[in-house]
Length: 264
Image (cartoon, rainbow, N blue to C red; front, side, top):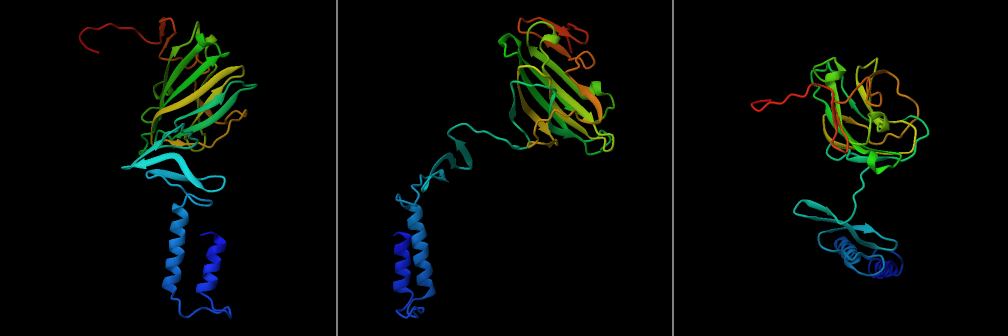
C-alpha cells in the first residue's frame, strides 16, 4: 500500500461523505490498520521499504532502507568491513594519522594526567608512536611511551620511553615525539603529539590507558602549548630513551647492562 492508498483507505473507512469521523470505526481499528501498514512497509521489498536480513542492522539508502555492514548476534557486533573511529572506545583512542608533511612544529593534544598530589590519581597511558623519516623504509620505527603522574615529582620516573627500529643515530630518526606540559595553575599535565617540520610519516596508537582524560576531537595546531615542559622526547639529549635498538640489532642503553643467571 502506497501513502496515497493509505490516505484513500483513511478517507473511505474513517470519515463519512460529509468529512466527519465515522462513528462506526473504532480507534482500535484505526490504530491496528496504521500498525499493520508500518509493519508492511518495514518488511516490504518495494519502494520505501526495507529488505531486512535477520541479525543485520539496517541503514538508510538512497530511496529505501537496506542492510548495513554491521551485524549483531548473541551480544556480539560484527563489522564486515573497516571500522574507522574518531572518538573513544572503552577509554582508549585507538589510533590516528597525523599526516606526512609538516611546515612547522605541529601539536595535537590527546590526553591529560591529573596532578601527582591528587589522592585519587592512578592515571597512566601507553602510547606507540610510529614514524618514518622522509618516508624512507629504513627509518621506520616505533617509539613507546609509558606515562604516569603519581607518586613522584621527578619527570625521569614519570615519563619513560624506548625506541625500536630506525637507522643510524637518533638525530636521523626523531621526527616526532611526546610532549608533556604541566599547567601552572592546575598542576595537571597535558599530553601532546609533537611533530617537527619536514616530510615525515607520523601515526600514534594508544595501546593502554587508565583513568585518563582523553581529547579525541582536538585538531592540530602550530601554536606551542603554554605551561611548564616536563617531558619532550624530541629533545632526546635532555630526555633520553631507556634504550634504542635500531633495525640492524644494534643497541644503545641509558643505564647499566647487567647479566644475571640467578635473579633479576
